[in-house]
Amino acid sequence: MSSSAGVGEPRRSFRVDERLVAPESRYEVEDGKVVYVAPSDEPHGSRHSKISALLEAHVAADYDVARDMLTRTSEIADIAPDASVFPAARDPVTGGRRIEELAFQVVSTEKLTDAGRKAQKLIGRGVRRVFAVDVARTRVFEWSAELGTWQILSNQAAIEDRCLAAPLPIEALVLAAKADDAMARALLAKQNSVLMAALDEGRNEGKAEGKAEAVISILNARGLPLPPDVRQRILSTRDPARLERLLALAATCTDTGVLVEDESSPRR
Image (cartoon, rainbow, N blue to C red; front, top):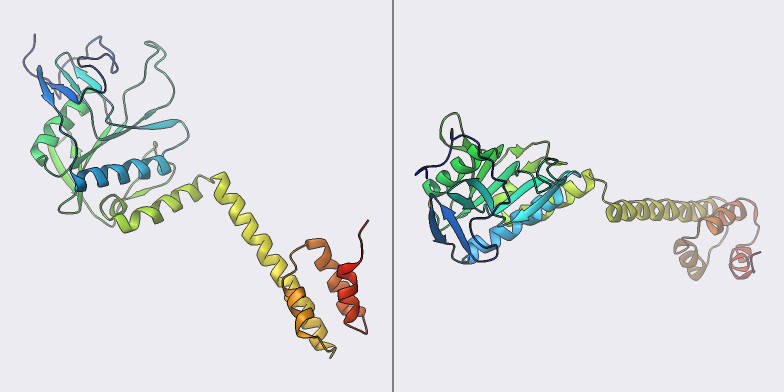
């Protein structure tokens, strides 16, 4: 059995979802050694959760997101990045999942050098891009296969990739206050149906409010007295058909009382 794994090792016939350790057991295999993965502390766990949520919001339609998903990187390694993005379509040859294209490691108690060894294994297996999020120093790195080391990314930059429907801001990965804004922008870019419905409702609300104010303006311009209660009822009207009738009446009526009568009249 080979004693090393990582960049440059030949591809094996094993699948990425062919296990060396039992899933859900909190163990990984690195270089033939079974390693226990301890539960997260608060900084790691909190950042882990935020990254997963950000990826779910940003992921493109043909991709899926996973947390702590084991990936077989060699005959002697079966490791799990903290978060990963992989194609939703199954592998046409194996019928199993495909290799992830993006992987993220949260670095808190774990050293950046340890995360680098894991990144080498993932890149060597075919993962396109691997990132490390340094919680304590609020920094994000991307592994450079060419240089064999981490490269720091500007907090003002964003990750752009075919796996993502919208650019993922670096500052959202390290600053909790920026995460919600980034997720909202991503969902808008993906034209999320709930947000689109809310926007349409807002536009309709704005149109209705504008028409109600137009009724008031017409009546004022014509010098017709408008009791406060009638004014308030007009301004609170949102039914499009009724607003159209009020606009027509405002332009022709001689008594604002007809506006109230119109409201109480049955419609056919």
